[in-house]
Length: 357
Image (cartoon, rainbow, N blue to C red; front, top):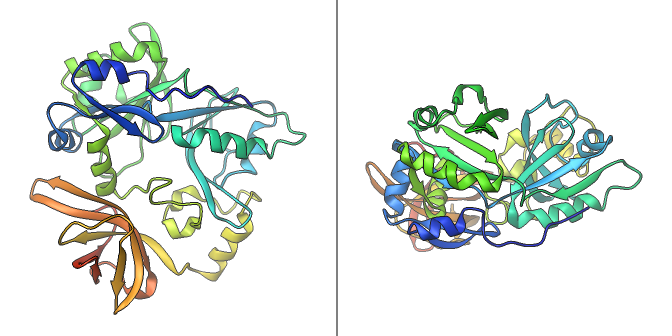
């Protein structure tokens, strides 16, 4: 196993700072938190027109060796061995007690399986996975300094990509499409979302500044992680280390797309299967619409009992006005969407995810 030295700045960080971005740490890397337009304008771009953002805070782990597919299939919660070429899926890594130790996307890239996760998870995931390489022909290496990514999001994002010579129609959800841009190899994929059009472009770090400039010139609005966090809450996407902790069980998170029940054995599989056979878990990840702001970690009261907690809170600038939205967990006996709750001196309502207004 090789893990690259820690570089806290993304490949685009200095360029973005020189163009007026305020830098801050996000998911293990330093990148743009917001630009001069302000967070609300950036949020409007990725939900109403087109925004572009630095994804250099995503890390990459390369898995090589003849046993890579079989071995990794026995490590994570989704089906790796049957992934078609250039296709990917979302996974959890569990411990023997079924608790979540990390999350990642895995892509079959032919001679390697490429794991895409947050930079903050790369070292821990690499060391944990390396511990289980015994007699297997498998090697792990940190590819985070060799590959960076840029996100393009919003209803006009396909138009912007076409304007700079990238054909977005080749990119199906979680399918990496290898194309050339200005003579340079890049990979384009579309993320899975019924509500929001989002593309991710992976490329060599030295090409990233030129691609960024081209996207901005074509009309994409530079967007920072402050706006991305607001969007993440609106879309109901849990973040590892914030909404998903190492004490949580897979079915509690409601991330059903991370689980495959026909692939065979993997670490923690017995617990996952036991939960499925019993039919439910006691609590579930959900959304909350609050009447006023509350702190992350605030307890949720329903039926005069403590029934849950908030894990993320954001004031989201919707067209209809600002709303305070939260993610968190609630015990099933508290009730479903529409149930009134009390949180830290204010009232709220349980809501389905993603939020719809």
